[in-house]
Length: 206
Image (cartoon, rainbow, N blue to C red; front, side, top):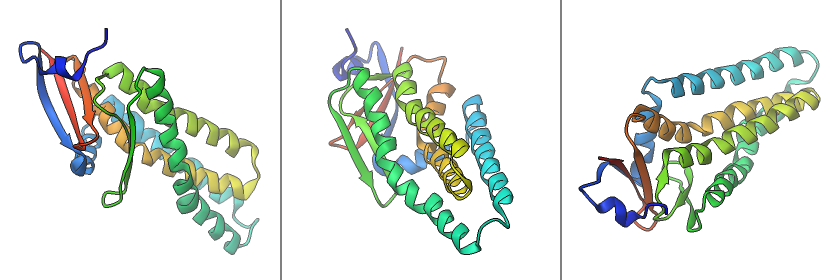
């Protein structure tokens, strides 16, 4: 039987190690994406790799298209498509949440911090479950974009390569929490969210 939130209140077995109000999520993300680890080395490597792919495509299309057309597709890749892909990204979080047994799924947005999120209201999440939920959008969306870049013509390659880079940077929040779990990998960590109070809690097994 899976753990319940009430089980984590047993101080003889579990100890709260972190409490993150949603209004401080950006601070949490910035903190953990700066902490060096294999997780963050991988994340920054992929960001640089995808930026390199975009720049390579830009160099290759130089002289073949008018600057006005290139600017238009640049705006699509940097602004329009990233906005449109947000619901797709969040859906890719909802599906693995549902597959892992979560039913009280909440979707939220904080425009002040420019963040969108999906939470499992009062559902205890393990490190393994979170890894699955966090990586599905990163893997599925980026693979789909790489395939499209491979087969679509010039300006679309440029636009979607920009989207590929931007989408990867949009995964920074997911990787920040992955990094938190990784840096605490010697501990047995559980987390749960109170979507009403807009707070995330992290516990370790004693």
